[in-house]
Image (cartoon, rainbow, N blue to C red; front, side):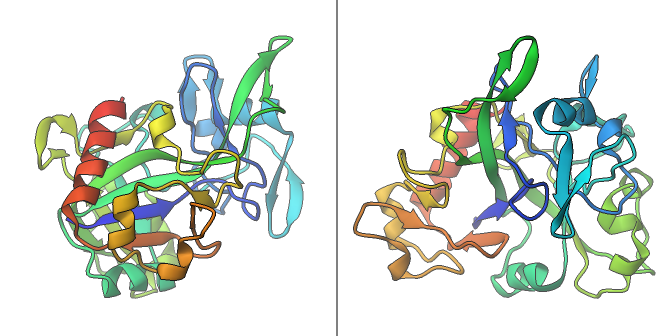
Length: 280
């Protein structure tokens, strides 16, 4: 089983600020802004609050097209990976899924990613606090790369204008966008119902914050990671032996969405234990 580290959510170019770690430990990966159908105001955080409401508290503007724009109730987003079950009203047949396209999909294809392999999603996060009844980022908290969710692949669907799309999938951005359908690399990865090694755990899901999920080495910038030593014995795509630095960290590349780790029992067990101990 290959493990794929997949970078998702807000970054410095799309969004412009970190996704929040809520005071109760929830990791809310904010989907990047995009001209899709789903709006931030459509996404439910809890009974009385949407993603739009959350984001308005944190920052009234959002970055895309290299500029800052006012965040409104009509601002649209790219809900992908779609692994947060309760953010939308779901069809009874809905499954978690994730889409990829162009060079990033070609990379997954060239690295032999297949049914049964496991995505571990990570992103840029920062701790939040309540101040005068309003949520804000903790100015003393570091910026971190954190694992926030996972998806084990059950099915891989190449999507074009002739693909028969299941009804429950038709709202996924890679299934409904006509421009994406014209690109032969457009692909959707559908999750297993349950994990292949543990039928009691969903095949895709999210994590609650725990220090074991933090990739960033303490005291360093977020792209400098503190990976277990056994990672030094495996190939990680887009990286080389030079990614391991004398200061004791692994320097992840700044460009690239997916990093595929070659099959390795120790890495596989590491990933399985992360899911077992941290899934919600």
